[in-house]
Length: 299
Image 1 (cartoon, rainbow, N blue to C red):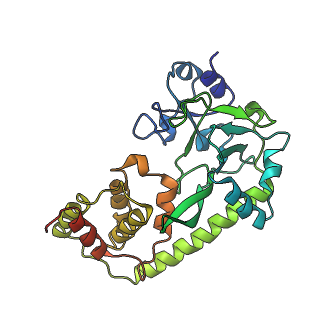
Image 2 (cartoon, rainbow, N blue to C red):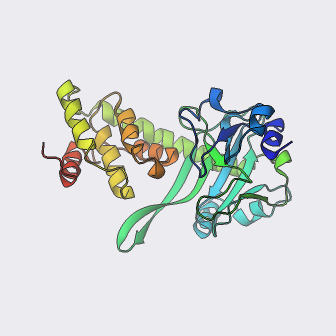
């Protein structure tokens, strides 16, 4: 039995990937499109991802992008990352990239898949403020679809080396997420939900742009002249400007624009930006006019 089939036998749900980290097919994050059959799994020949939300026992990944910053952030909340890494049952997915760590956990019995969150910090890079990801709690999207993480022995697109298993534990006996870590995750989700509700309340008092065919055509033209392959600050401001329209499908329009640069798009980042939108303070349609004209639009 090959490793992919072995994963499925042990309750994992798989996502077929291209040679990098991107899923092969549209709708990959829906339950009906993941692979849970050992025979199908044995036929996979490229990279494979773990569909956290659809495993027999749902899983999550604690994904560390900046080790020193992640240690400091967790320590303030009473969790020592070094202790998690050195646990006798710790299961790591090792990419080989310095300062990057990924711990794999199972959710407690009866616990439904939880929304993923990303913890970011603002740093100065060449005199410009940028948002960098410190740590992520990865499992599902806000609407319950799965997130995925690349599994060994897939080949990392940057290093050209295979992912491998690390830690003192065994992936066949993935440990349950520690209670303190689960509590931090839940607290962050609760805080963000409260912020989301405040944003919705403010939005109900905010008059956006009339939803007419003419306005939709105008917005479509402007977005066609704004590249989503841009800095985080511009990406964030464009998403906020689209949301400021006040249209029922504004979030869908923003996501469609982001997906014009799929290599820059991450579900977690997108939902963080959406949830932090404040129509009383964040960029509005004037931002679209400005950047569209920079991109050559003459409307």
